[in-house]
Image 1 (spheres, rainbow over the protein chains, first blue to last red):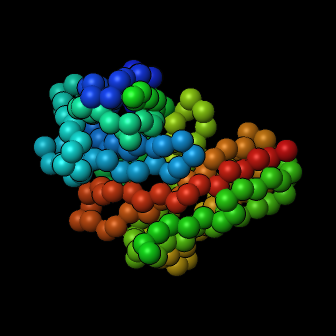
Image 2: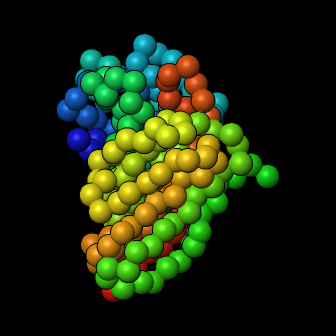
Image 3: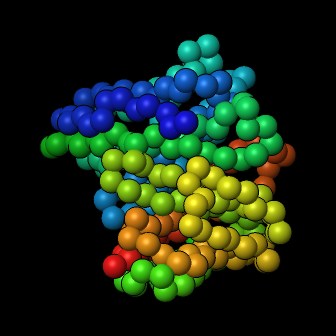
Length: 113
Length: 115
């Protein structure tokens, strides 16, 4: 089942902060975040695993609330380069050893000068 | 240069004419996957492969086939394409881990139009 992302779109000024949320109705093993710029392929940002392990970039922060099956991506002091569409992908505990990812519909972030 | 390549990048075809989109990676990754991207729907997984000769269905496998005969290649086959398969397709690969997930590297995408 597809995770739900919110907001669908957000417009910021340079230097402002943004939070993008991702929630699932099923128990999650991990949450994955990717950014896609217009006309390009998605690029990896971060993975958050059940139990607290994180893999990703130092300048991007995110949280994973295992009780609520929610994740939030925090973009602080936004730069023009942050513009793009952000996708969360979720892997379910019920999938077991299968590495199946289901992505949300995306959050379009626009940073204005 | 480490990369995932897809061919062709653009394809216009007609209903029912079999086609193959190739995907190749030079990073010795075990895991490979195909996604389609449609406006408002995000990325949807079609098939994935955890290693040679091991493939599994994703969320939207109907109308597609895949094969994994070599580690580096993971072609996507549409035996009888239909207009609802018009989409942007991405191939991705991921390095091996001890069973957990890892970063996926995406190819440049293939824009397919089925008339």
